[in-house]
Image (tube, rainbow, N blue to C red; front, top):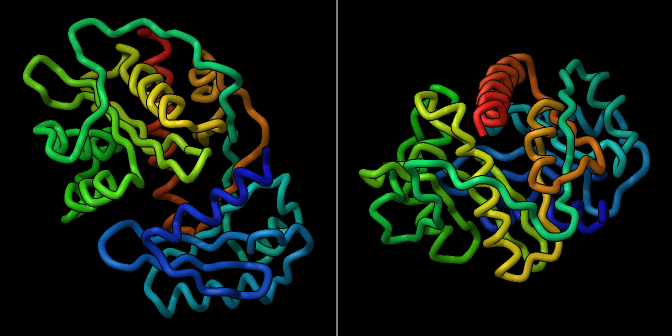
Length: 271
């Protein structure tokens, strides 16, 4: 299972980024509009990682003007953490969860419609913006066009909880690659929390992934509280996802994680 997830992690950035090899590490570099990527262990590498390799990647990231960030699975590449921490980066731990069997049913929230959102859908813009609003942010310029292009190419699937006027109160995505898909970016606008919308959106994404042939569906929770929320859908923790960033990005990630935790806990209480 972890090998399939690692293969997915290596494949999914390649639709929008170029891969630069650094021995036991691969740096993914964003091409075009979108969020900057990160470095990961080279596919198949499970041994130790020299501190010099991490420093070389960080130097390249500084040269490119992108965040000095690394992502990996603790159980798959246990030798990376010591090298990353030796360079002064902060490492954050997050539960890596896999859906067991068919998803469990969750109550349909009252007063909203939860459905998939397509390229020409009038709800597309608000569905792209909702997860950013969950963290008190605005979507970067071009975000809707980027998601629209990925939807058209079959690289992304988008679900949203819509109010009576058709505006998105919560939204999220799953990113299919073959028979594996990851649920990402689920967020609820602050005014709509405590209604179970994030859980309902996740359920819709999982159902869509299964209907499209996904045999393995997984996600990363921000912490144990959010993991318990996803457990209500049938997800279980199988490993630990690690994210390492320089101090500035680390502080931003912590703030975003806190906002996601608050939204997730509120959704659990109100579902």
